[in-house]
Amino acid sequence: MTPLELLEAWSGVLIVLIGLFAIWYFALRRFQVRKASKRLSLTAFLAFGFLYLPIIVVAIFSFNNSRFRLDWVGFTWKWYAKIFGDESVEGGLEGAQLLLATQNTLVLAVISTIIATLLGALLGYGLHRYRFPGSKLTAWLMYIPVVTPDIVMAISLLLLYQVLRVVSPIFEPGLPAMVIAHVTFQIAFVAIVVRSRLATLDPALEEAARDLYAGPLDTMRFVVLPLMLPGVMAGALLAFTLSIDDFVISFFTSGPTSQTLPILIYASVKRGITPDINALSTIIVAITIIGVFISQILQRNQKA
Image (cartoon, rainbow, N blue to C red):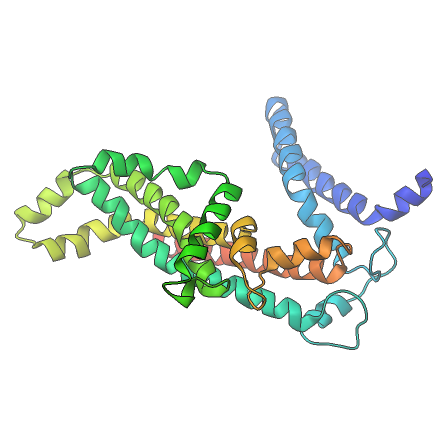
C-alpha cells in the first residue's frame, strides 16, 4: 500500500485526531494555561487519546459503505438499518441474530447482577459486621474468584455442571446455567466493594441510632443502607460490566440458543469484522455515554 492509499484509508481517523488536537490547543489559548500545565494536559490528551482512539475508529467505520475493506468508501446509515431489521441490506450478520445476541447478553447481565448484588451485599455486610468461626477464612476465600483465571473457572464450572446435570436440568448448557456461572464470580466483586465501603464508615453512627431508640430494622433501613448504598451501586455496576464483557465462562456454559454478543463477535472474527458489528458497538457506547451524562445531571440536581 502506497503512502497516498494509506492516507486515504485512514483519512477519517486523521480528521478526528486533528479536530481533537485543535480543541485542545484552542482550549489552552482560551484559558491561558501555564507551560507546566500545558505539558501535563498534553500528556493527559495523549493518554486519553490512546484509550479512546479505538472506540472512535469503530464509530467512524460503522458509517463506512464497505463490507470488509478498511479504506473509506462512502457514508451510509445502512448498517444501523440492518441491525433494526432491514433485510434489504446485504452483507454482515443477520439483524435478528444480532438482536437475539444482544437480548441474551442484557438478560444474562441484568438477572445475574441482581442476584449477585443481593447476595454480595449481604456477604460483605456480614463479614464486616459479625465475627464468627471461619470468618477470616471466608474473607480470604472471597478473593479466590477475583484472582482465578477465567479459563480455570470456566473449565471447573463445566466439569461441575456435567455432574449436576443428573440432579437438575437447570445445569444443561443454556441461559440458566450461564446465570449461575456469572453469579459465581460476580458475588466476590460485589462483596469486596461493599465491605470496603463499610470499612470507611464510623461505627458510632449505628451506636447513635440505637441510643435514639432505633431498632435493628430501623437502624439498617435509615442508617446502614443509605450509607452503604454507594458501595452497593458500585458493586452492581462492576458486576454488570463484568457480565457483559465476559466471554470465556459464557462460551463454556452457553447453549445453541443462548449466544451472547462476545461469543457472536468472536465467531465472526474468522470471517472478518463487518460494519454492522461496529454499528452495534457504537450504539452500546452511545447508550453508555448518555447514561453517564444522565447520572451526572441527577447528581448535580441532588446537590442543588
